[in-house]
Image 1: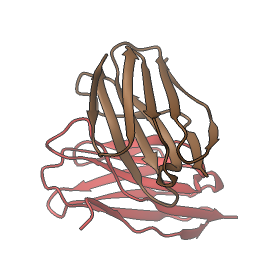
Image 2: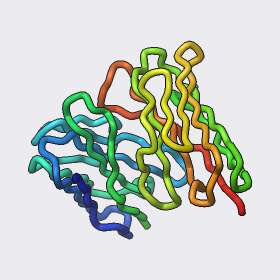
Image 3: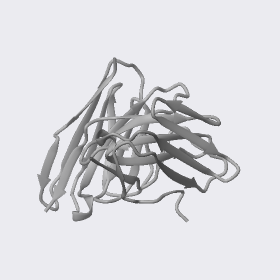
Image 4: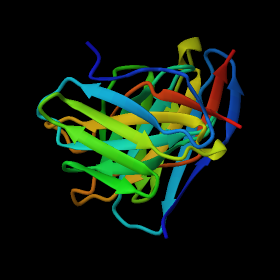
Length: 113
Length: 111
C-alpha cells in the first residue's frame, strides 16, 4: 500500500530564515505530487504541483519554491520566511493516469516568529 | 463569489441523529467532486468521491445536483467519532490536478 511521509512535524522559524520541508511517497511510482497550505481557520490553498521529476507548476506567486529531485520526493523551500508563511503545510499525492483522488501526508505545522 | 462554498457550522447534534451538509460550486464545468474529513490539527482524509448522481457508503450518502451546482453529504445514525470538519472539494473542468477546497463544515456530535 502507498504511504506518504512529511517532516518535520512541527517547526518554529524566525522571520528571514530559510525553509526546507520534505515529502516522500512509498508504494507507488510516478505519482502526481502537491504542496498545500492551510492557514488558521482557512481552507486549503494549492501552492505547487508536479507531474514528474523536475516538472513544477506554481499556483500562487510567493516567496516559496518547490523541487522534485526524485520520482517520489517533493521539497518545499524558501530563502527568507515571512510572518505570513505560518500555517499547516500538507503534501499530497495522486495517481497520474486520470485518477483525481488525492491523499495527504500528516503535514508540517510551521510558525514563523 | 467563492468557487466552493460551505456553511461553516458548527452543526451540534446528538448521537444517532441524521445530519446533512450542503456545498455549492460556481464552475458549471466542474467534473469531479469529493468529500474529505479533517480532524483537528490533522490532515484531510478522503471520505467519499462523488462522480455521477451520487453514492452511498454505509451511513454516508453523497448527492450531486449538477443543475443547481450543489453537493450534499448525509450522515445517518451519527457517532461521536463523526465529530470533525467536512471539506467539500471540487475539480474545475479545466484542470485534473487542482482541487478547490471549501472552508469546511464543522460537526460536533454530543452524547
